[in-house]
Amino acid sequence: QVQLVESGGGLVQAGDSLRLSCAASGRDFSNYHMAWFRQAPGQEREFLTTTDTTGRMTYYADSVKGRFTISRDNAKNTLFLQLSSLKPDDTAVYYCARRWPSGWPRVRPIDYTSWGQGTQVTVSS
Image 1 (cartoon, helix red, strand yellow):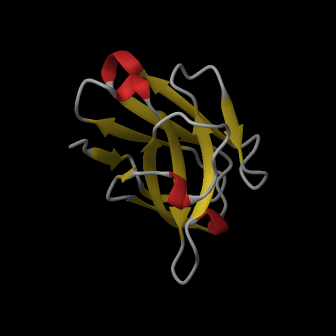
Image 2 (spheres, rainbow, N blue to C red; image 1 turned 30 degrees about the vertical axis):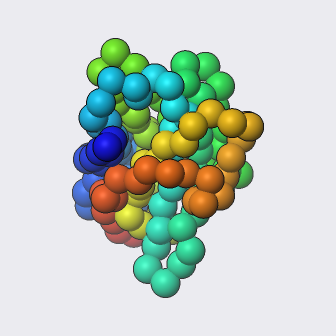
């Protein structure tokens, strides 16, 4: 069974940058589409961005387009999310997720079959 483990969250100030990582166990990481979501207290889980198996195709939610960048290193079984120009509204738990490649893009949480435990990002004003 695959295990996804996020890291890199923390407390930062508005305008700062942060890089999140998602380490995947197993040997089939490169076979899956990967994505990042976030969930703030009392809010629904929000889609942020997704990438295809190679990392060449990416898709972003309008709320983060131009500020966040998704990437992956298939040799290291790791997914990344570079966050820049952070705002207090970006405060949330950030999750990585994977799905079998079928259709593009997929933005609903229900479309993803495996999830990490999340990493907290807190942005102070």
